[in-house]
Image (tube, rainbow, N blue to C red; front, side, top):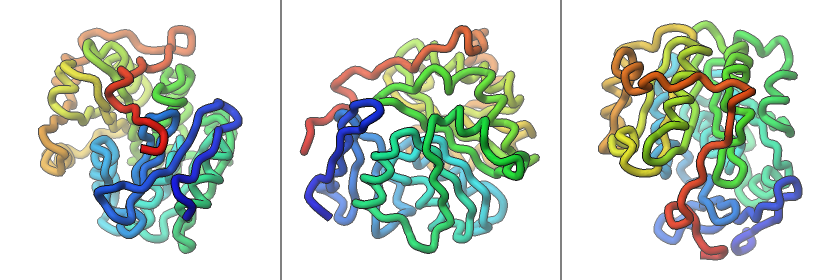
Length: 287
């Protein structure tokens, strides 16, 4: 692989770069305009470096029986960290990845090739538009939908609304789940609105995050798990024990109280997620 392969993304104009992890041999970080987007351990795809990705990995581990193949749809490709994880832990899974930045996919597949045995289909286009046009045969069959859509460091407004989540819900098998990565800072107005919206769209929701993030004391990622059927109660202590620590899981009455009456987000009221402070995530090119 050439040193620090990079490209200017034609659609957004963002600069995407893949750099080696100086501390973990064989690992690489994808940054977009200086914001770390993905981390991949080529030698061990089960090694999930980012905290929020590990939390989603724990959710994937709880689906069906251990090692059993699943059907998954990933909205947002990044460096394909979670599709690689699903293939490594549940070989034979059928996966679809949706990404609007085609040249980002080309960069990642060239620098960090996907396993040849993996059944991963890439669909190019806007996440919401592609979901609306997915084949009818995929409806009601998907075990996992991962929503991790970012333009630079922010989630676009149109993939945060009730109408969007209701469309995503049409993909799910009866016990399927949606895992959503949401970033917010002190006050948590954005993530509380997302929690309220997911409760309305799907009915059953749990929030996983660092305890300090859920208390609104610092900027960070919250992972929501949502389903049209009740989430198994035995998931909760296992998700908590899986870390990263310190961590907390909110569900049921505790989650409703945490939402504290936040309004449901619709297409008419949706806004992008708040930008992080530049000193939180951003790195210099080539660093």
